[in-house]
Length: 406
Image 1 (tube, rainbow, N blue to C red):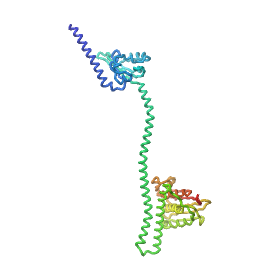
Image 2: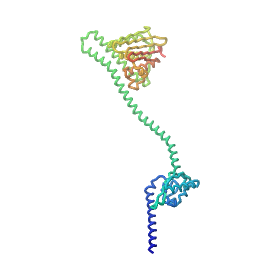
Image 3: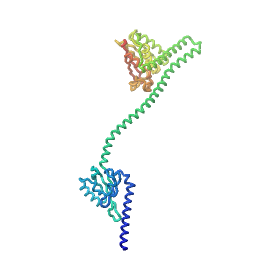
Image 4: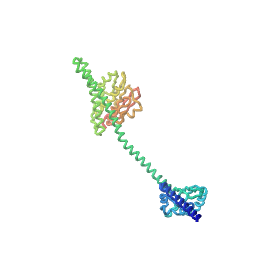
């Protein structure tokens, strides 16, 4: 009786240990298996499924309860069964290994899995269970295909996002650039306005403060004031012209006039300005009376801007040469100076519109503002303007205009 009781007690202990092991398996499943994305199965020593994770079972279209108790070979596709059996036996001997096998889903669909099999041993080094981890290769291929399809779309979206970011940045950039241009324009125009104003105010104060000035001196000072006033008026009118041209409302008021005569007067107006720097100004024409049909006010202001630049940027004791040549149907006005010249690399940008502070007033101090205005006026008369220059050797400006209105 005692021996029988002992056997019963040992069986109870064995069953208790088996229940403990099952409990441990379930605990392992609850703590780890159910968060795993791949197929996770624990087989007993005979190959029956003891535990399986829910996400793995779902891949095979089963519930966990439906898989528990099935022999694992029931999931293997028939066409893979023979190869699987031989490889599986080798793994059991080794205690671990990998197999690629098609597993059959509940609805009969075959899916390729890469299985990693690990043997779990008891205290007597006997296999008590097998841990199988399966990666669904079909699923991976499907994800890879989806990624390959998504990647070009993602790349396209990135380009669109980059374009949209650039579009968002562009208005801010343009505002900054426009603000820089405005500041440079106002600063430099203020300087251009200040110079004639200073002369006008200075000589006017001399005349006002000294009533005993000689008549010749008063006449000289008055002449300077008059010339500087005309210069100031030309500059203001040029600014107004540019504003009107930008609005597309510019209209030329063309009349016939004697260009030789008006150019001679203009050269005389610059005599005092040239004398201050001891610059020799020479004017020549191949015909005393050369008539042209043009907007007299604006075309003469254009010539004035060119001559003013030539004198301004010619060093003391230099020379400025002005020539008018009557051709068959055209007239050439040439202004040559021995001034500081222009860098050849800058010449293509000189006549550009006021879109850059370096163009408004270029680095070598040639006034881009007056040259932009000159080009626009000349082109409105269907003429051309060209510049040839070398640094420290001088500049030649050629303006060719039709004699008759086109």
